[in-house]
Image 1 (spheres, rainbow, N blue to C red):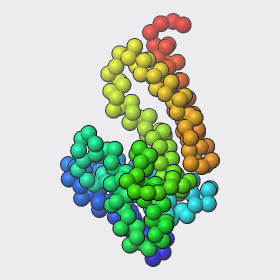
Image 2: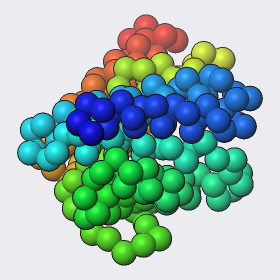
Image 3: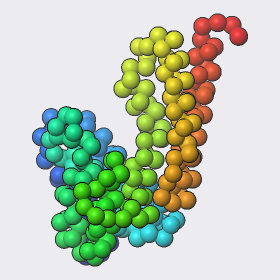
Image 4: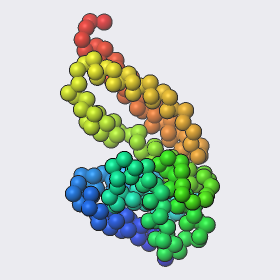
Length: 217
């Protein structure tokens, strides 16, 4: 099997798994989002892999499958915390069938398992490769689409001016804390800082605009 065939097989596997989930069938907008997010994470992972010298096919496939456990119906309180570990369990036999070496399957699965809360239910090492899966997932949370999504889902438009200002200032403070987050590679660190700085610039301008919305300065 060629590397391109492995990637195409992983795409088909992910799509079939997610589309087969009862929750996803009942909420097609969540299915569309989860697939889009998985592709963005895979593209970020591949970008990092190319610069860091990791195997691009392994990274692309592992990142594509990092959220495959969304195919399952979860307990509302504990399911999300477990989806990394469940994803590794679902992905492992499939990765082996693709012909990846056992030690590479282990590294890929460990990265999938720990991407939620840094814990796996099997022994492993958080190698730079494994850590990149988490990094790519986290980096995707800070891009243009997420600004739109975050404001929309929080009902920002319906808030009072005071509430909007408080929300924006609180977000700014949190972003400044997050800017120093450690990453597995230098490439991921640069991408992370770039995305956080983009968010900081947006929310700084938003705070300035809100301050000008109620009085003459």
